[in-house]
Image 1 (cartoon, rainbow, N blue to C red):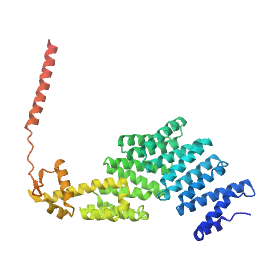
Image 2: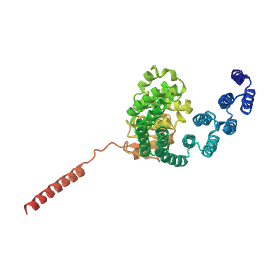
Image 3: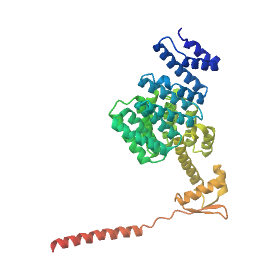
Image 4: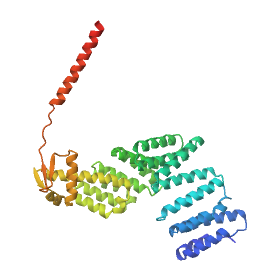
Length: 416
């Protein structure tokens, strides 16, 4: 009797526990023919894993992966690799399941080694390195990546090699070690140029290129890479497209072109990604355009998850906040030669201690010339005195005279 998966699928919404039990029964039962048995169990594993993911049952999903290994051993190696990698990736959508995902991934790698499934092991080790990165276990990630790179270069497997080199670049960026991150990305691009690079992998390479250019404050080039990323992910209907759009808007804000944000958001490509992520960037752009610290802080508070949980956005917005604060403070203290710090704090609507610390930093960085009179609670601003260039000019003259004397000495030596 044929298994009616449509009926079981209907149970997933009305009676999910019954649906889970039905799928588990199918996994231990035997069908009339080996072909039908294999097909039914494969479908049951796929549907049960998706159901467990939707119900956030991480431990049950881990048990499913462990119990399915005997069946998976009978499948072709390519199909087994695809199913196992898909099952491991499902943990990513379950909250607080990262440690369990690492544990299951390690167990599955040991199983792949025992079964002598080389490509499955390499694929799982690549995934484990990415999990180490997500878990901030950078040393473990680099150790695993190093051994993988040696093996992949020997086998000349360029597809996996590109993925691992890109992962290495991401790890070095997280450390942060920008020179090594750039070198790893260059290696990944070189490897990608010698093969057909799938659209999603090309988009991931462009994304990393944009991130590294943004770190170097080259926001114009970063914007162009993020635009390519958006097109790549959008063509594949990948959810990461919204992240590329978010970084595009960030680049425009950092380039002091906040007025361009609305035109980008209302463009044909970006309209379908409207949501809180994009609303957060629009709020930041508006605050920057108005040069308002208050609006900036309100945007950060309102969209805390969207702006604070993204390390890349957070680091650039911190720099933007400092710049905006400096501009506001300079504008306020400009008419004064002596002003109370509390008065400045009231005008920028920030705590006095924070304003005092920022003014102190600006004086040390020689943004303006002045001192903090903490006894009186005042800032004393001095007029900029013209720099006396007499010493620099005298040193330059002596240097040129030295060159002339040396030249005359060489000519005299030649005459002798």
